[in-house]
Image (cartoon, rainbow, N blue to C red; front, side):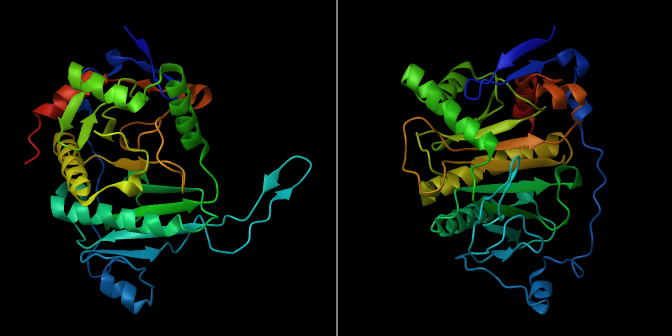
Length: 325
């Protein structure tokens, strides 16, 4: 029987309707992966150098960062709000960068923990640079894996968007977390971690620094979340030891997803506090993994009402049994 579940932070409802897809193996990816040659890859370092693409400063051996060729945000040094009788618009001021992995064929699930830790630290380095610009109000770090998840270039890479506005979806999360704290005098994410560790049925993995689980009100099949064990609002405050712990648990759950569902397309992204905001008692930065295993229909799009066709409990049970190797 379908059930309604509510996200305690956003207040959003989802429908868990497991009768529509009973078995996890129904979600095994059938996406055909086209592997262009390394020689012709646009993101190979030697090809970028030949094209005179500028490399942005990072302290890393096996990761490099470049400006996006087709940016969503650009540096114009001006923001003019153009208000009319009905609509508003302004320059899309900000930064849009590509974080490129060294190996042409090794995506996050196939990387060593050390290499993934280096990538995460590059995220942190670039984040700290962008928030120095007062124009930047929010920095969103994302990774698209597979064409169905929006990866237009095969070579593994992440993207960093430094925006002059806080995205509405992020604003709702921040406001929801604040409202929960004011009502209960507790951080919603700290409560979720405690509950998931106690119940264990949606728990995937935990280490000294992080907990990974399938959310109670999952919007998508095999949706996963990684949350720091200690209360921490700002991703950029992550310590070197925490970077290693984060890399270890991220690689572990992505490797399980990769092996269990045969390299499915997915997105992951980091939700953190707004730029230059101090640590607070209500928000907890986290990473979300969203596999792209289906297409939203009119009900989901029109009602903003996701239907998840397999329960997070069943997903977590399946993934726990997968040996990540």
